[in-house]
Structure formats: C-alpha cells, structure tokens
Image (cartoon, rainbow, N blue to C red; front, side, top):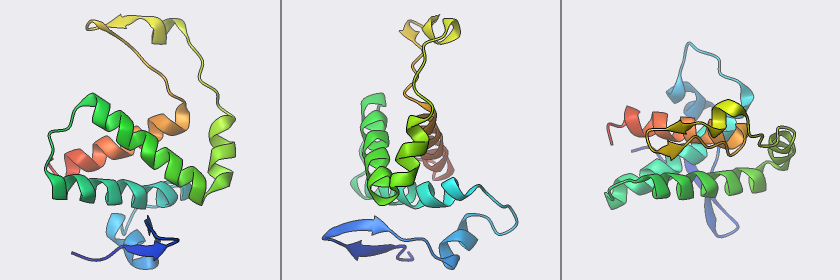
Length: 125
C-alpha cells in the first residue's frame, strides 16, 4: 500500500501530489475541489478498513463531519465557498421518504458524503 499521507503538526493530513492524482483517474479531469477533498476521503476509508467496523448512518455522518472539519482547516477558502450555499428547506426536502426525512446539510457536505459513499462502494466495504 502506498503512503499518500504526510505528518503535519502532529496529525496525519493527506498530501496531494502527481502520483495521487494519477491514481484517481488518468484520463479524466476532475474539478480542483475533488483533488482537495478526495485524499481526506481515502484516509478515512483506510482507517475504517483497518478497524473493520460495521458502518451505519451515524458513523457516516460523523466521518463526513470530521472530513468537513479537516478540509476547512486545511483549505479555509473552501469553507467560505461552502458557506455561500446555505442550507435551505424546500418542499421536496421536507417530504417524507420511507419513514424518514430528506435531509440537507449543505452542498459541500453533500459532496463530501457522495465521495465517501462512492469510495466505500468502490472498495466493496
């Protein structure tokens, strides 16, 4: 397993380099925000993989919140970007679905959750 992470200020934080970008997709160009967030997703999934816990919705929410916090610390400009799109309740988001409510935690947090779920499925977790 390749080491994609560097030690900074006593905490493991993902670092992006050309090798990592090439491992994600060599023929597809993703938006810059993807390359900033994806290393945090990979790091979190690596930790989950080593623990072998059963994943539930609360764990996904907690991991997503943790990734959001770390990304905002590392890239303050993304926090400003995320705050441009506040959470809004719409008629569609307030409708009941299968006994639960649709939820919106903001566009950026939804993006993080999508990347996280995608990586978990990719690994067949």
